[in-house]
Length: 484
Image (tube, rainbow, N blue to C red):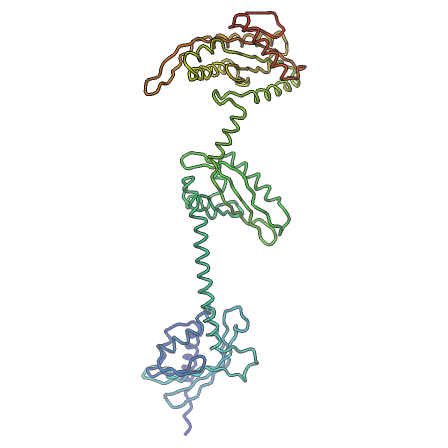
């Protein structure tokens, strides 16, 4: 007996329920189980066994698309319905499954879905569901069975797990290398704004990462440091052709600290470039070198300065004397060099030891500096010998000689004042010693035609010995009449 033709409204209702099922299936929404009857049965996506539990059906169908990101687009090609009775309708449709994956083989599935609906009270329920691959409808190679997709998903899951584990290990190693070290690791964008900085920066400079990220790199440096960084960036912008790897550039730059200190950092920086060779950012490592810089400065200081008094030594004096001679040639101005030896210095050393002598030399150096201009040079030659270099004296030789004589007289008066020296004693109070120490001074005036610094020093030394031989506490000029 043929079933009666279904009313149009029932066909429309079944079609709407079918489309709703497909939509919910594509979105993997568990609410579709509300459409299942209590005695629901269905074939799995692979079509290889029957299930009689709606929850199991949902679990199996979810596995089919476990690794497919996002919503699945299902394109229904046709829909036919057949009334099996007044309360049972079978609906069937051939459709394409468009998967959002890059593999073109898996990007489209062709399948046929059959649903059997039964009217239960006021609602239609799905009592049976089956999906199949109608091979005659498509070309070979265009269909990839749902079961194959499930197998591929399992392989993808294993690969994702493996890659995730490797990523976690890589991240742990990166944190170990960047966060558990005293070196500061950092990244900046093309506008020189910090995008990442490691915790070592807070330990060194006192600023948290939240305070630094987003700031311009110039804010990290002193004014001197900013100038250095600008120069390095200009070199980076002009470096090699696109595609040629650019190695790290290393430079030293002073950094600002929260507490007002300045620390030196050795920065190893490399620009990040895109495929066209354009700079898109920077990354690098900063290592604190403050102690090394202080040591270098100290070594440099000792190379050109006396360790006891801090005055320029013989090496630096000769360099400045050569500069003064060259400047005199350009300007036509005269200069003068004084060679000075302290009188009664050996007696202090013999009576009270080298500690007392060192204290007197330090005080004598301070008095000498107070007697001359900032531009002049006071140097210690060793022992109790000092040299004073006066530059930019009058172009008239007689007047420049008089200027030098006035400075020498001021020096004699300053050095002749008594010295009160506090000599430390082990386990007790300082011992105070008062000592009077005069000086003998030899002077050489030089002009633009004098070109040999060593000769000038030799003449000043000879004049000093003439002053010492005349009874000490005296001034003598080279090749000038004796004067007390």
